[in-house]
Length: 174
Image 1 (cartoon, rainbow, N blue to C red):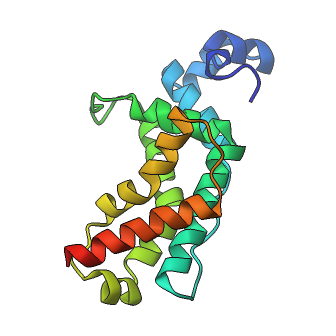
Image 2: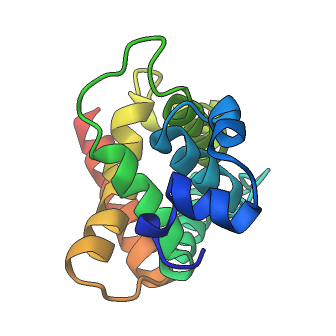
């Protein structure tokens, strides 16, 4: 939380924690594992999916919550960028901390969208052939792009426009 990504080093952690390097290496094989674990502990929680209401309203609520995370938690954007820059797939025995962090982000941050987008009302409105991963990219992608490129705040109106465009395109696609 202090000093950014560059501050999470083996030397800094051993100095701050008052432990020997060997002790730290028993828990973290690499600096990447240490950094992934630090990120995992600092990630903010995600609000659950709304249980009821029109599909549009549920999606706007979820998207607005994601927008707040991006605005209020620079760490969240940093973690997503850090994970996104890893374009080389790791072997099964490499980077376990990073793989664990990816799984946690997918499980925690995607689950509310999955719950809404795979619901019976979503299937009725959007069709049962919806590719949820593509839908997520179409919905959340503009938030991340806006944060990285314009740095403009994103509110409920912006999120509603994204959802409306998504729903309109999906209905026309069918």
